[in-house]
Structures are given as C-alpha cells and as structure tokens.
Amino acid sequence: MLKMKGITKTFPGVKALENVDFEVGSGEVHALIGANGAGKSTLMKVLAGAYGGYEGDIFINNRKVTINNPIDAKHNGIVIVYQEVDTALVPHLTVAENIMMDYIIQQKNVFMNWKKIRRFAKQEIEALGLDINVNRLVSGLSLSEKQMVLIGRAFFHKAKYLILDEPTAPLSVEETEKLFEIVRKIKNEGISVIFISHRLDEIFKICEKITVLKDGKNVGTFNTEDLTIDQAVEKMLGRKLENTYPKVEAVAGDTLLEVRDLSGTGGVKNVNIKVRAGEIIGLAGLVGGGKTELCKLLFGEGKITDGKIILEGKNTTPKTPTDAVENGLALVPEERRKEGIFVNETVETNITLPTLKSYCRGIFMNKGKIKKVSCENIKKVGIKTPGEKELVRNLSGGNQQKVAIGKWLLSVAKVFIFDEATKGVDVGSKAEIYELIGGLVKQGKGVIYASCEFSEILGLTDRVYVMYNGTIAKELITKETTEEELLYYSAGGGLNGE
Image 1: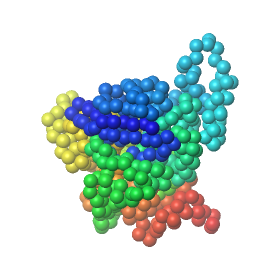
Image 2: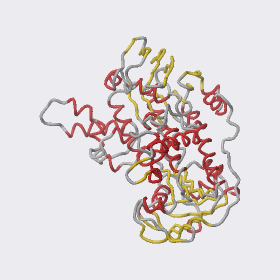
Image 3: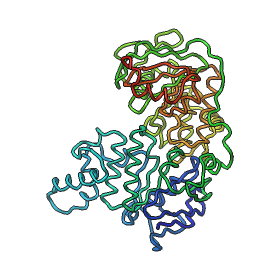
Image 4: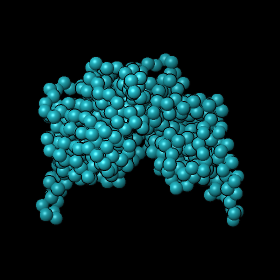
C-alpha cells in the first residue's frame, strides 16, 4: 500500500495542492481525474520526485519515505511515464539502450556487454507481449511504441507503482486497446498503475477506483462501479455540465477556402475540400490517416508537390507558415508544447506574438498596449493564470491550449485550423474551447476541425471530410451521418466499391 498524507505544494502565488490524501493498493489500477489545473500532475510529480519541497508524508507499506528527486522515487519502485514521451527518451539511441539506460550508466567496466544489454531489453519487451526490434532507433518509433519502451524500462527496474499521465491521448483505438492489455498484464504482476486521463469512458473501462481532485483538494475516492460518467464530471467541475457540445448555428456564407487536388509531404495526395464563412468543417480519421499532415501542409509546413490553395478567390498557396499567416490562415497544432506555444516564455509574450508588429513603432514596443491587450485576451479566453507574466510551462495543459488558441484571436485570420484541439483537456475546458470556436463562426470565420474523436466531429461540425491514407475517402453531411459510418470510411471502407 502506498499512501500520501496531507500533501501540500505551493508555487509562487499559487497553492497547487492543499492537504491532499491519496492511496493505492498493490495490483490496483487507480484513476486520478480532475479538471485542468486541479493538481493531478502536480501530485504525481511530487510522488515521482519531480517536485521536492512539499509538505506532508508519503508511506509505502506503513514505512515513511522521503522523495525529493526521481532517484528517490525509483529506489522506492515509483516510475512515471509522462504524456510527452520524447522528453524521457534519447532518439538517436536504440530501443535496447533506452530501456537499459540506467543500467548502462551504473556499469563501471571499461567494456560494455552489448549482447547482454540487448538480451535483457528483449526479455522486457517480450514480457509485455510486444514485438519491437530492440536494435531500432527510438527516433523511428511511433508514439505508442515509445510509450512501450518507457513501460519496458519501468518493468526492468522492477517498478511497483507505475504512473501513466494521459497515456492514450496520442493513440489510435487499436493502440489504446493494446495499452490496456499491457496494463492488465502489469496489474496481474502485482504492480499498481495510477492512470491520469481526461477520457472518462476509458477510465471506467480499465480502472477499479477513481480519485477526484478539484482546485488542489481531494473531492473523494470511489469504486468505479459506484460512479457514472456524469457523476464523475459533476464532481470534477463542482456543477453539472449542461451541454457537452455547445454548437453555434451560423448561416454559411461564401467560400473562403478551396483546396484543389492538393498533394505533398506527409503522404497527402489529391485532396479537395471547401470551407465557407460561418462553417465548421470536420477532418475525421484514425491516427495516421493524414489529418495532421494535411493541416500542416495547408499552413505552409512541408512541400506542396501538386494542387492549389485558394483563399477568397485568390491563389495563396503558402510556402512557409509566414506566408500562411499573412494570407489569413491560423493553425492550432496537435503538439501544442512543441509547435503551438513557447513554454519558457510568458503568457503575455505568447498571446501577442502573432500580432507583435502592430504594437511596435520602429524598434520600440508599446509595452503598455501589449499588457492591456494580453490581459483582455486572457480574460476573454478564460486562461487561469496568476498573471500575464506567468511562464506558460507553469500552466495546466488545458490552459496552455487556451494560450495556443488565444494568440490567434487577436489576428486577422479568416480560416482557423484546429488539429486535435482538445487532446489532454478536461471536459469543462473542452466546452469553453468549443464556445471559442463557435464565436469564430459567428464572426464569419471558417473553421477546419481535425479530430479522431468522432463524437466531437458529430457534435461540432456542419460537414465532414473523412481521411484515409492521406486522401479524402468520403464527404458527409454531419447531421446525416453516424460514428459507425465515420469509422467505416476512416478504416478504408468503401474503397474500390467495397
């Protein structure tokens, strides 16, 4: 039994955790849920040694332990797999070298027994029921495979408590089910799994217990069977969520964006789509279907080999993101921390960056205006932050996403592209993001919304283009289609008359 008692963690100006109790038993899959900023990741970072200087006590089998750094955590059998798996792996090393990294570092021999290292790594991969060549470079792996490498590393180090932070956010349906198989296998080995996720349907499928955090406090711990999804949402938010998808009904106007026979990098081929003013277009498809690649190509990232992008009747095919922005396009990318925000800069800097030129006269910046505009936008978007000077890395995932969206609201963009805009975002923040998108179409903007969450596509969009293998497999009217039909065409159904 692992117990955390009275955990309090304070950052400058913010009490992230206040007197939190949390416990997990051996061989238990335990969910930790809450809205963005509730303290989930902070609590787990305390447990994993990423955050020292906490108040309270941690016990393992009634023995008090001190965890001030990740080494302390590992010595106590605690391992965390973060959502950003790339930060924990060395891309130019092999699978075997990454799994055995700690072992390699600890060796004092002049010569390394690489055959032994590869054998040990292979044993851990096979123990998880995986088929990954341990000689492959990590840089060539998929996100799900990288996750498995980190879980294999935890297995090798005899982890007793495995923390999975948003593990399914980047995964396809098939990859998620494979992860669940591994979680069940780990559970049967007596290892405890702490599962952080905003996908509540998955929580109820894989977890036995649920602990809910709200505003840095423990709302309660419940048996999964004693709770419904609606009840869990109410406990997370402190209120009922009346409308999951607050769809704005707007009258579609003239065509803003037309894509003709577009082909290019990332496997995009012969894509034809149209976006009208006041319309939300869905790009539906499974992971790997080409949604992200198409979004990036539209925004000038990558090389267009054929076709045209026409904005308001003019050929504006962008060669760079700068071209795209100047022509009236905006992109909120899937990987927000890598591509959508500067995590080591302030909220103010991020919010005003795309429109910075308008606050400058020559080499001089109007800092007063920048502050005024950023504060107004922070309030408008609903970003929870101590102030405009707060570093973005200190915000929760949902608030980081609001920064990634908010920075474009000050621009003169005509077409907004959202790629998996609510990945890793809680249900309350999702509804707020949907309302922001609704506000854009009310203004006559065009929106492209790419998602593998078919419920989002059905709840938000007016028309849907289903992508498969880099091209458009089917165009559908949203109110006339179903999740089953979206899945059918996303998986390649209907091709060649099938």
